[in-house]
Length: 408
Image (tube, rainbow, N blue to C red; front, side, top):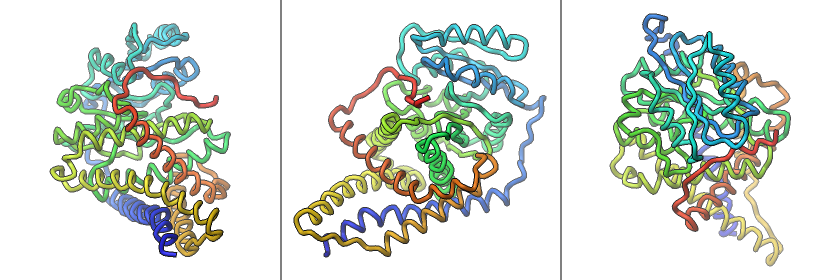
C-alpha cells in the first residue's frame, strides 16, 4: 500500500502542484495587466524605431508566401524584412526572389542566400549581420503575424530599458486534426498560462518563443547573437541574456499564428528537442541555482524537478505494472485523480476565456478537456524521458535543420 501511495504522489502530486501555481500566477498576471492597461509609451511614425524582421527558412515553399504577405500588411511604420535561405533543396530561394520583386514598391525586403545548411541559429546570425534596425525580430517562415504584433513588442521594449527581449503569444492555426486541436488547447491553456505565471511570480520566463521574439540590438550585441552549437537557440539565448543582466518579457497582446505538427512522430521529435534544450540550459547554467537572482533560481529549480518527476514517474508506472501483473492488485488514490482533472479543467477554462477572442476558440473545444489532460502529461513525460536518454547517449548535438513534419 505504501508503495502505491508513493507512486501516486510522484505521478499525480506534481501535476496538481504545478497546476495550482499556473492558475494562481496567471490570474494575478491578468489582474495586474488590467490595472496597467494604459500604455506609458505611444509609438508614432515620428518616434517608432526602425525594426529588422529576420525570417530564416529551409524548404518552406508551402508557407513562405503567406508569411511575407502578413509582414507586408503590418501596421508598423518603419521596418525591413530579411529573408534568409539556409541552402534549401526546393524552390524556396526562387520564391524569395519572386516575392522581393512582387513587393518591391511597398516592402523593404533583403535576401540572404547561404551556400551550406548550418541550422537556424547560424541563419539568424547571418541575417543579423546585414540588419539595419535598432530592434530585431525573429519569426519562423510559417508564422503569420497579427497587424499590430510588431507595435506591441516594440512598445513593450521601449517602456522598459532593462528588457533585452520580449516574446509574443503563438496561436495554433491548423486545427483540423485531433492532434492539432489538442495543441491549440495546450498553447492557450498551458504555454500561455505558464508564461503569465512565470512573469508575475518570478519576473522572468523560461524561454522566449522562437516563432515570435523581438530583441534590443544592444542586448543581442552583448550576448554575441545566437548560439549555433545548441539544439534550441531560443532557450539558450534567453539564459545568456539573463547572464548578461538583461530581463526578458512576455507580451500576450502580440499574436502570431503558427503551424504545429499533425503527426505524433513529428510532435514527439519537437517536444524532445524542447526538453533537451532545457537540459542543455541546466548543464550550462547550473551555478545559477545558487548565484542567480531568486526568480531565475526558481525557474531552474522547476526544470530540475520536472526532469526528476519524469524519471520517478517512469519508475512509478513500472511499479504499477508489477503490482498488476504479479500481485493482481492496483490501488490508486481516486481523490487525487479527481482533483487533478478538476484543476486542469479550471486551468483550461481560464485559458479558454482569456484567449477566446484572439485565438478564435469555439465552445465545443471544452469537450476535449479530458483527452487534453491525458495528452499533455503523457507527451510531457515521453519527451522528457527521450531527451534525458538522448543527452546521456550523445551530449553534443548540433548541425542542420529540417522543415517541421506538420502532416500538411
